[in-house]
Image (tube, rainbow, N blue to C red):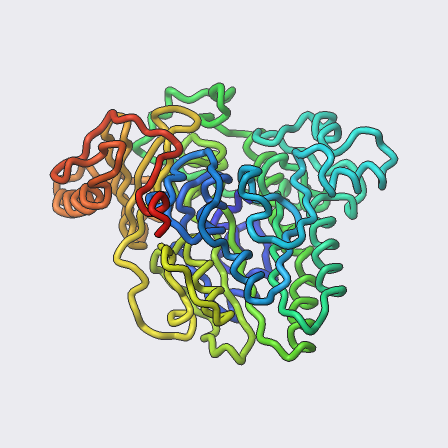
Length: 468
């Protein structure tokens, strides 16, 4: 949850150490231009589960509605798989039920009385659970403050999630295929990695946050705004936040060593091929351009890790580094194809299997992602990107940004006001005009973008209403 796409050591990150995730990338493919469809937990997971874009589902902001279409775990369960979710819940409304998971062992850090919380209280002899520990450390589930984990490492939520996942693998019948979702709450705050990982990062040469020349830096405060979204992180406050965040990622990677080997060994013993996917619901701005948290169009928030590896019998090409735009919606059709399960009729995601096998084909011309207002009306956005250019439109006031991700991966130089880039800007604007035409919010009249329109987090969609 909330892991940035650039936080992999295979990408040259100066502090993060992820040899296990790197190993999967070398066995299979790393999609460098992977994006969340809506950069917050609820809508991103809705898209992951259903393979539907927010424009199709109507889940365009931080809100949920019942899932009424087939889900990835549900379809695999119908095909004979045992489907299990371990760890962080999928953050959907109760009417969505288990989202297709036959078994759930839940631990989301902030939920009192879930499976991890009960384990934690029993193991520590405390009458109060994990939320009390978070409060005692002076931390919370959305802030940039960071401290080392105060108890033994085996009690950390990340260690418990891996332990529970390994138990499922060990106990699962070899006669039934397994679909296991190991769902980490880290590196989402609270930022409390075990002390060894925190100290290693704190003592390292930490990177400078992205510093856009388009940001009004003089309007930012080190105290942050009410939502903890706009803030000038600097000095020891910044270093502690980075150490907490990067330390949680390093801890995850160390913990999954045996999880990966167990899963591969089980599949091989059962005589089955295996597939492993590593991704996140969204990223974390971590001080970039004066932002913290998510819900932004910029790379720190929107770009996510996206690795797919598989056993040799699947015919995947090793060591692929793919720069085309992909998204969470693509995971469902990809895994359904690997499992020889027919995809549902309503599906926006694209199967990546041909590309994973080395075929030279265009995945999509461009990718659209968005977010309705959450922290503020100004925060809302629409984005189009083809992996090189990224066009951003703020629907509140019509502000535009254009970035060349090849020459400016940190998005520090906005090209939208440069005369020589006007043709490129107008091309991308025209694409968004066509994309948004017909939306119930009225963002486009078919000839121009219309700013200032209402932008609710949920809306009805004709496709779902008609049952298609």
